[in-house]
Image (cartoon, rainbow, N blue to C red; front, side):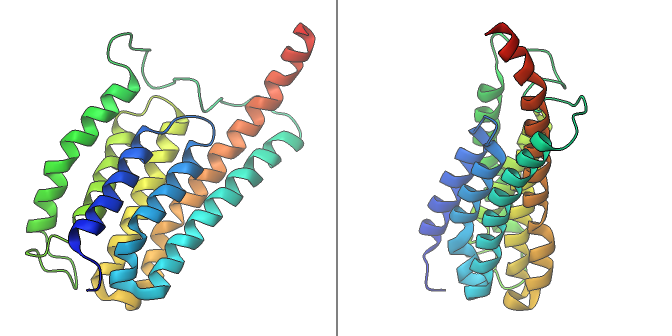
Length: 215
């Protein structure tokens, strides 16, 4: 394989943990870049250079579309919109906040991903190798972020994580022969980044007159 399973696991797990915890108006782009980098060793092992190119292109597209969406939301005719940073799916928690819930989910995801990696064969990967673990862990963390989402930004980050993890797993089926399917799955990340950027641009344009009036 060329890359050891422990190295693959460490890179993927670190990237997934950061992605599930990151917050802010650039969270989707940051999560996409970090997760693509963390799963790049797995993509290289099973898909070679084309596999790495899929994740690299996904990360670059996420950053560019996030910026393009923000710019479009700022300059196009104003319409009242939803601020993706305002909690919309659950009331604020004073004791167990969103990050503590996500941290718990990231911990629970470890045994789940471990079970998947050793019991679910996917394409070229045999269950005894456990090489599916970093990809399964990233996918489970993405699902956790979707399930505990409090804002649109959370949902967008979760979609991006699931899309990138699914695209990488698709490469495991038959390497470069699964290139098209991997690309289609990874497209979810740039689209989520564009949506979050668009909503951020619109909400920042809406609040700007209020700030100027107060000044």
